Length: 408
Picture 1 (cartoon, rainbow, N blue to C red):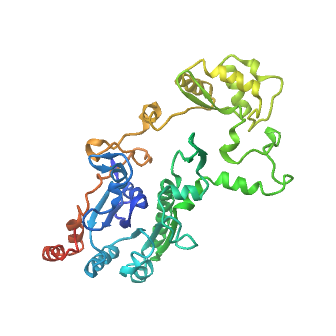
Picture 2 (picture 1 turned 180 degrees about the vertical axis):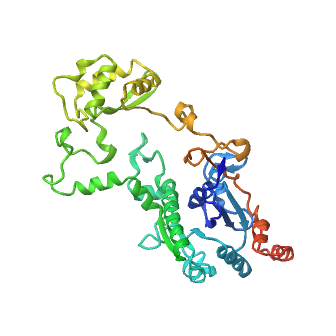
Picture 3 (picture 1 turned 90 degrees about the horizontal axis):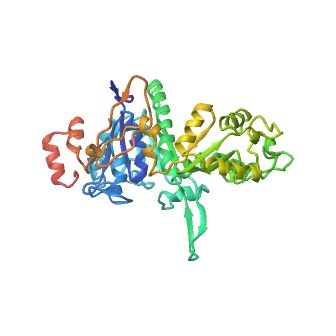
């Protein structure tokens, strides 16, 4: 049985580019999400990024799914009035444009919430509604750069370069925003009181990397107050994953056909591993710490483990981890992940035959139920007549508005 967990929840989205990810999460969970776009080409997310599938950006195929598209020119007074009718029929508004765009059309948060007190209004922006960077133009990686997520380097030609495995700000912010929106919606339905939410993508990026940021902050305090982990001798390491460099029992090792991440820092896991591979000699004379013992800086042991892990395939090491109850993880890449048996067992692609491109679903699993699959991403204005008729706009009005250039 398929279900829409947010059946009956109505959302209107005024968002460009990846700010529209908030509406995607809500649509995947079953909300009716209406995306208001400008007539013509609509949200230009269809024309950015790469790759293009059937002439449209993969970003649109993914972020536009599950939404109905209404093409209204809100710069025209008639269009602004129509947009207000859509807002008034909604529970939630997602604003993901440059600051002031809706306000200049008489559709800002303060005005709309005064007229519709139960509205939950979520503004998603790069840097938030306050602070010196509020008006600063940006694209997605700017928020990870702000949060300290870029790893800087230099090319062989002497040019500056940066590495980032995943753009965190634009990927995590929709999840933070959706959780906050749903909490606010529960309160609004209980009390009739909506609220205005201010979500910044730069702060989403920082929130994900909290351990590293808080670690640097902690290291500003005296060493008498903030030490390293006693199991590793109390040596202060670089915060976050930067401190993994000299770890031995929590480290990446090469297998015969790839890599594995070995994580036997608890004594029980280390003992199980050594017994499973018939290498009790690796236990040594010292029991070490019960937890968080990384065998930090033990180069001899690291060299021995390097040779050990080169004797089996990644799949064989994972099987040992399962059999002996030892944390050993396969190290996949975005290209190889779909070949992983665990991925294949739990993930059903939204297929290209229906969605234009193979898309990852929302990674939410229900027991004995399934989420209803979202509709494919819409063409600009595909649902204009359908949505506006539902608001009582007559066929004659639709024709007149279209002739006036208000509708796409």
